[in-house]
Length: 405
Ligand code: GLV
Ligand code: MN
Ligand code: MN
Image 1: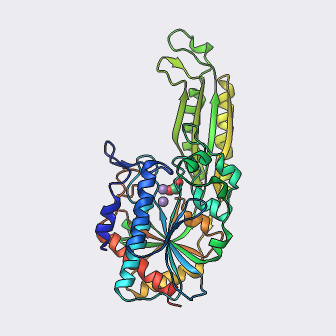
Image 2: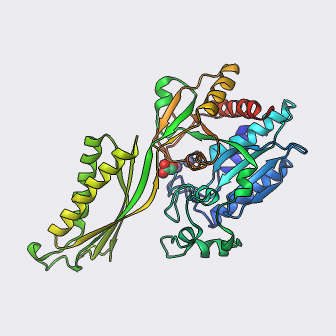
Image 3: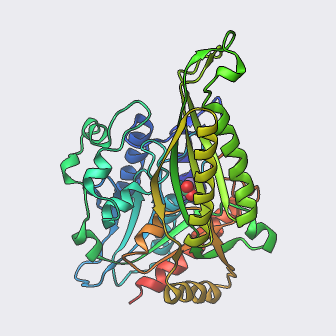
């Protein structure tokens, strides 16, 4: 099937018309529609599909009689709240399209090819990014994962049960991992480096160290119209000071620090808040710089909370160290692309990916597709059709190189 038709078949699922963004949160109706789409595409191609114990989807181009480990490709289908269409789905759609291209050419792989769609990559519902790949590889314990809660207090265990999966089965899957020899994730670029280099495609060289921290500022609820300024214990003030300090720290340490989610309780316009919870996302080229920046932000938060008669409790929710992608596999990708006349510069990225988690267990690489808007995690995220098609051609060349023997 042509890339454009395949892409169009997924596009309406989980789209939120008022914002034009996507709300594909794991184990919801939108997620079920995406999963049904995946299974349907696998079925149309005669690829046996399965859902692993951790909720990740797999479609297999089997290679009967081959004792060799499969090459996996794919990405994720979930989104951030009001995310763009490409982050994740481009890798899954391109994987099916690349298989179509290889088959149309009569290519027969010497080892299996697997298409994967990892669950809850964004942490959009349960707060922990790359949950499916972390569970698969043992980067998180089953107990810690099952106890994660969404914004309504529903646990992962409850959500999986409601979706018909046995939460008792989650955890490392050594048998599945042992059957894989490499993973290649194609992804939209989440910045504009390729546009600046006038290149359609890139090869990832590394993922920055990154993590999420939850900050709970507590104070005292009171009346907005009668409480004198000097009598207030308003947690919004230390929170605001921390947001500004995080920006300054990011500049001085040359890292990234973002507060993108905040909840004030009880949330009344005419009341001082009793507490404010906020989530810090911080990223840096190396873990040392990240640690130093977060320590500085923590000090500011605690100092300002105390100044305003409250307190601030900070706890890490996730951390992923810097990941260097396998240099041998990267060279094989670069050579396969060069042989097909494709130039693909090497790029580092501050975005997290399942590939960064899988890299701890398997030779792993990533291909990036140019994003002319440079915008991601927002509806303006975009890749031109011609660049997506170039991505499919490149992925097919890479899969051919990695599975021809
Ligand atoms: C995922 O896309 C992330 O970088 O948070
Ligand atoms: Mn993302
Ligand atoms: Mn992604």
